Length: 222
Ligand code: ZN
Image (tube, rainbow, N blue to C red; front, side, top):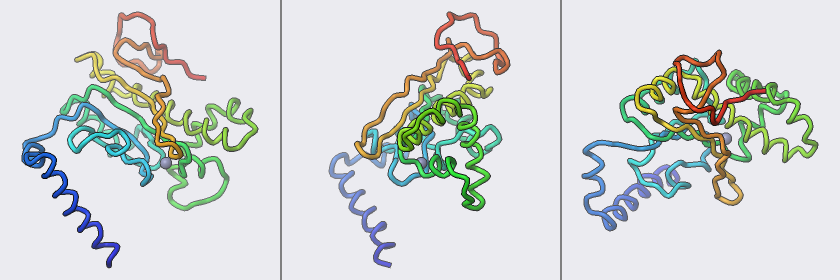
C-alpha cells in the first residue's frame, strides 16, 4: 500500500513544485491543448516522452504501445493519428523507438509469450523485410540494435502510407514525419534521418494523391 500511496503523494509534491514555478500552470492548461507534436513510442516505462525531451504537459500528444508500432488495422493508433493530424493539426509526427526494446528482442526469438505473440508478428515482418541485412550482422547486440532502428524506419513508412498523412500533406503541407531512436544507456535520442514531408515521393502503389513535386526523400523499400 505504501508503494501505491507513494504515487498519490508524489502527485501532491509535483503540483506544489509546478505551482511554485508557475502559479498559472494548471489554469492555463485547463483552457485547452495545442501540442505541435504527436509521439508514437514504446510502452516501456523507461521511455517517457515528456521527460526525455525536457517538455511539459501540453507539449506532446502521445500514443504508446509495445515496440512503437504503426499497425494499419489498429483503430486506437488510427484514432490518435487522425485526431492529432486533423484536429490538433500537429506539425511533427515522431516515431521513437529505443535500444533494448523488449518487444523487438522477443520478436527476434522463436519463443511463445502468449497473446502478445500476435502483436510481435508485426515486428517479425520487419525482420523478414530486412532479413539479409540483419542476418549479416554477426554480433547479436548489434543485430538487436539495428533491428530496433529498422523497426522505427518501417513504422515511419507505415505512417506515410496512411490516407491521414497523405491527405494532410495535400491540404496543409504538414506534418513532417520523423524516426528517432532513444538510447536507454545514455539518455540520448538519435534522429535516424528518415524524415518525410509533403514533398516526399512514395512508391506508386502507396500513393493516394497526385503530387507534382521535386523528387527528394524518395521512399525506397527493399
Ligand atoms: Zn520497447
